[in-house]
Image 1: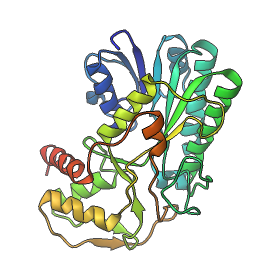
Image 2: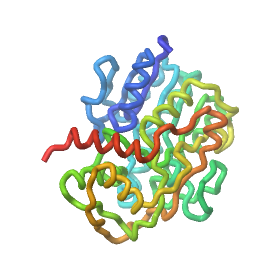
Image 3: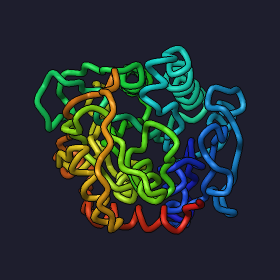
Length: 319
């Protein structure tokens, strides 16, 4: 892969920065786009080319159009479900229009570039069908965030079918790991780590019985690499090149808190708060398609992943 040119949008963020590290370790020439609204500049290694662009900008479009990239891993997004509920216009602007800006740039200037879109494996399905959710399940998003991600998947199918673009979508379950932002809705593991390190109990919204599929960031990175470099099935229909990336295991929030306290060596009582609107009750995904077509499966157990994550937060915690 030494001659490959890779673009990672959101490459200064949680998942994106790990992906940049991995591609660089493989010998690729890596370029990063990140407007630093959530990402951190110091996460981008010195060997990567960095551009502080908004993905909706003409600068970002020009870079995609003229950059000669073999693959683009598109992770830049508004990722807070609660924020999407309170401000759906901003969510749609970033997540739909920003993605369209990149897709149009690929279409007009670099049609051989493969684009891997980071979608969501929980928020697109909704609560109508019993999990584990398969890629072909009916889509009933419970939030503007999920609606935006699904909308981009429909655009991806359109660009593949009508314009012949080489595109795919990875539907992430709940990703956790080192570098996750504890100051937002999207990272419950990070939030719990920070609270435990500050001597506070885990705060659980609702009764804690709601389930999620928690997948370690290193496994998500591996899925991106395989999708960006491997052989993919024929595209053209929604779900054809969409892959759930999770563990296939349902874990309740109460169980997650207990497992993390075990990793942290604490035993604080949980603190409960009212249920939040727009939040699914049950969510975990089937990963059989990714196993078969990407030759991918997660390697990190929840216990091991939580231990590594808590150790990282403990090393970076400031009182």
